[in-house]
Structures are given as structure tokens and as C-alpha cells.
Amino acid sequence: MLSHILGLFINPKKEWQAIHDSDCSVTKCYLSYVLILAAIPPVSGYFGTTVFGWSFGAREVVKLAPESALIIAAAYYLIMLVGVFTMGLMIQWMGKTYDAEQPLSRTVSLAAYTATPLFLIGVFELMPILWVNFLVGLPALGYSVVLLYTGLPIMMGISEEKGFLFSSAVLAVGLVALVCMMVATAILWGYGFAPQFVD
Image 1 (cartoon, rainbow, N blue to C red):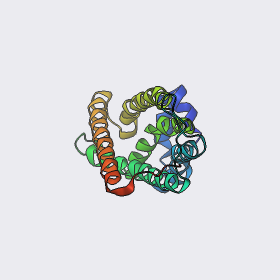
Image 2 (cartoon, rainbow, N blue to C red):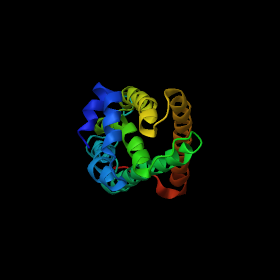
Image 3 (cartoon, one colour):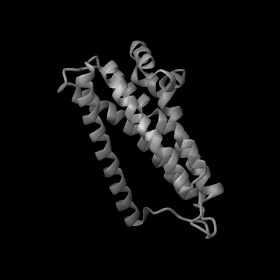
Image 4 (tube, helix red, strand yellow):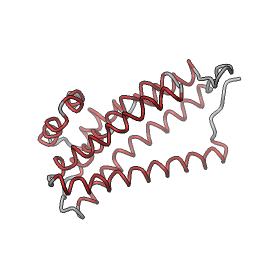
């Protein structure tokens, strides 16, 4: 399944068709793709925040305590794994509205491969520099949206016109989920789950 990565960047339509035809199970999709790629951002973030740290202007470098960073990385990884599956469920559920009922394995594959640029760009978390992460993260997010709009009609077996509306609805659900995660993080930090820094 990792062989699809390059194709998604070179010829996404052709690669989406290949992904559709492979008809991978949810378990195989997770074992051979999601579990591997979703580990890139949390592992990079762990080393970036504990080994290299970050600084604001001329201030000294700030690092997270390894124990605190490990908890955050584990939660980050778990959220991504659950997020891919949840988006797959949502896409399958929303498919009824667009006369595009597909098995869960196909909708989870769609969610997983759509997130590929976001997984890969996680390697930049080795350098926890806000403007660098923003600079590379924005195009990755944009390309994930392109993959969604390109792949959804192929994976769900509907016309491009219907696919555009369906993709827009999926994108809206994804943005709402992102905002909910940010709010949940702020609430948890307020209740004492804030990261611990090295003195």
C-alpha cells in the first residue's frame, strides 16, 4: 500500500483508480499504511520538542520534558488513528445522501490516502519552528484537499459534479472536527494536562 504514495503526487487520478481496484480491508489498510505513516508526526514532534526545542526571537531554547512529550505524542498518534477511522465512517454514512453507498474498507482507504500529505509533512516537526511548520503545512493541507476532491468521485463511484458537493461536505465535517479537537485540547490544558517544560 505504501507504493501508492508516489502515484498520489505524480498522477492522482490514475492512482486513485488503482487504490479503488485494490479494494483493501480496513485491517490491511491500517497495518500496511495508516499505522506507519501516522507515526511520522508524533515521533518527529517528540524528538523535535525534547531534543531540539524551539525559541521565540532571541530567547533561549524551550524544550518539553520527555515524559510530558511522550504522553502528548501518544495522544497525538491515537487521535490520528481514530480520526482516519471516524472520517471513513462519516464518509460512508454521508454516502447515502449522495447515492454512493460503499463498504467501510473503501471509505477508510479514502480518508487514509487523503491524509497522506499531512502525515508526510509531519517530518518537519523535528524542527519546531512555527513559521517553517506553517509554511510547509499549508501546501500539504491544500494538497490533501486536492486529493479529496480528486479521489472521492472515483472511490465512491459517482459523477464529478456530485463528487464536488460530497467532497465539500466532507471537508466541512473535517474542519468542524479540527475545531472540536482544538477546543478539547484547550479545555484539557486548563484542567492541568498542560505540557511540562524542562527548566
